[in-house]
Amino acid sequence: MANILVADDSETILLLMRTRLEMAGHTVETAEDGQDVIDHISAGFVPDVLLLDAMMPRKSGIDALRELRAAGHAVPALIVSAHQNRGDADAPTDLEVNGYITKPIDFDRLLETIVQLTA
Amino acid sequence: LRIGFAIGFAVLAAMAVIGVGRFIQQRQDFEDAIARSYQVEMAARVKIAQGTGHGGARAAVIREGQHRSELRDQISSETRDTALLVAAGLIAGLTGALLLFSGLISSLRRPLEQLVDAAGRLAAGDRSARVDVGGLSETATLGAAFNEMARELEIEEGRRDELDRLKDEFVLTASHELRSPLTSVQGFAELLMLDRDSLTPRQAETVEIILDNCRHLVRLLNDLLDLARSDAGRLAIRPQPTEVAPLIDDVVRTMRAQTEAGRQTLSESIEPGLPLINVEPDRIRQILVNLLTNAHEYSPEGASIGVSARSLGAEVEIAVTDNGPGIPADQLDRIFERFTRGDAGLTQRVGGTGLGLAISKSLVELHGGSIEVESTPGHGSIFRFRLPVAATAAIDGGQSRAAAEAS
Image: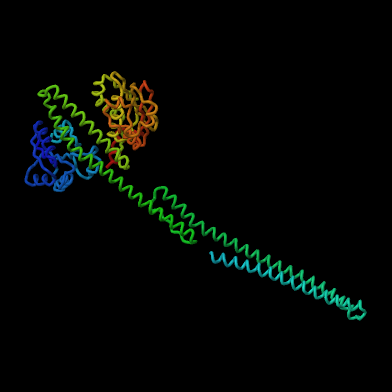
């Protein structure tokens, strides 16, 4: 089972994510925005998977991931987007993203993807 | 040019006036001379008649007769000269006028050609088209008026683009903002359903209703977003060579649960050996889901729904058929317009957004294809759409090439 760092600016969504992921046996750490994610990882927390909301105040998931990639972190990352299509504004082509999850979240698919990424 | 024209005209007029004046003067002089000659002759004849005249008077009569004859010769030669002068003046004036006229024409033609060219570019969408017309003050004024019009058009266009952008941004933001709470509602309702056994049947039913409405809201949001993008010309597709059969299989599989719940049959008929089509698979899936959802929702229990695909040379035609109630002729024309739906009685139990067909049409056209509908009330409907065949024939080669193009 995986160590997952979930970032979303909505506490309700974080609670939902934590509940569903923990029900599936994963360990969950939460962050309230992209900067919080960077701080967690800088503090030595090493997740198996990152689950980042694309749009967050202060620092978006995209920006946080870009910083992490630039710093050499290869941790698998899924971008959670409110947009239906990954081709939207929040999908830069030059950034290494391991998958896109759209809101509302299809948890069966999300759990399956996490298993694949951590296999 | 205008000054040249005026000078030419003045010269012409002066020559005519001088010519006519000279003619009148000559004629006057001639008549005076003739009259004087007659007077002298008459005086001589009077002297002869009175017997007071002598040989000198007779000679005077003869001389005056000769003098008048000379005067007549002189006047006719002078008149000829004057006529020649006037004719020469006229010819010179006319030639000058012609030259000036052709000059005027050519000085009009260049600005006009420029205006025609700029108007053409403006009409073709180049809002920066301007003219630089000098020359006559009339063409310069016309040029300035044209430039002013083009400038206002450009400003207007910019304002419209800005409004479009704001609308698009608004829909995007609204869609995003609505999606987060919706995610929570749907997510927690699903959480309840995971523990279904501990719910009473009534509670379970309630949660199902919440979930149904969540799905409906999601569809509505997705459709609105697509339409807003389509309106703004920003509904982008990433076509790639795609196999038709697996795409249809996939959609039919996901639709099966719904049609079986309505005891409807859902059949597939795909021509073997179809060429690859150049499409974005998710978008074609979306169109098929829209059409099949309509067929399912508008048809009664036990109805037959079918998906078929056949090759038409440069295109592949996919058709969704049902033997449901059909679409009345007066609604058929507007069926692809947004928020157009079947009759009100059906709408009550049909959960669509009224946007599906409008989006399907946009998407098909975005792929360079076409969509049409045929329906007989009481016997069912057929929705057919055609999509372009991919340029590459081989499956493997096609896909790797598309991947290379996409990167």
